[in-house]
Image (tube, rainbow, N blue to C red):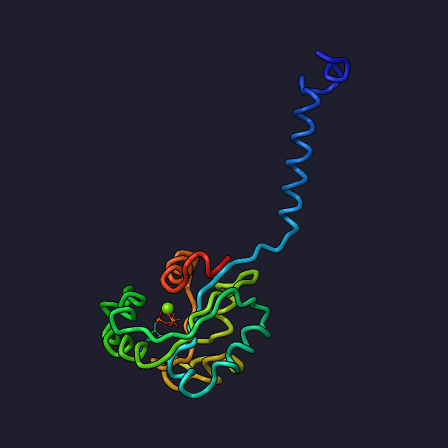
Length: 172
Ligand code: ATP
Ligand code: MG
């Protein structure tokens, strides 16, 4: 045992002290860093048809989201059913999947601190009649079904939905 080692409490060796010091520093850095989160969104066919795509993207960016990925595509009825499979027993499932496959959509991957909850807030209530002033659905949605925008409702859903529309290399 070295002379320095002998003087350290609890029989610690200089190397263990160094490890403890660096690990606690790393922890502090982590605590102070803002932790960013990814969510998934779709600008729905009604908003695209009405020419609101750019305005909705601007609202999203203004609210502090970074657009990680975006593309324009049309999906089939079967692909819409796969995306909204959690709603398969709901009475509106047929009509919802007809609507979602009725024209081009813009799937998006968005990133910011607290992205999932903050996007839901920015979107407003499912039914635009109940949506708060200033929300995207209040401004751009026409009905409870044709409601302009989708947003993931939790971490597991976001992961599934991002993977449904984007490959890993598109998110690098
Ligand atoms: P989204 O999942 O698209 O972000 P949401 O989470 O606000 O919307 P959900 O309950 O998950 O609402 O419903 C999914 C979508 O199904 C709604 O966004 C809307 O397009 C449609 N929808 C929901 N409720 C009804 C209804 N009662 N009648 C017709 N369509 C509906
Ligand atoms: Mg939902």
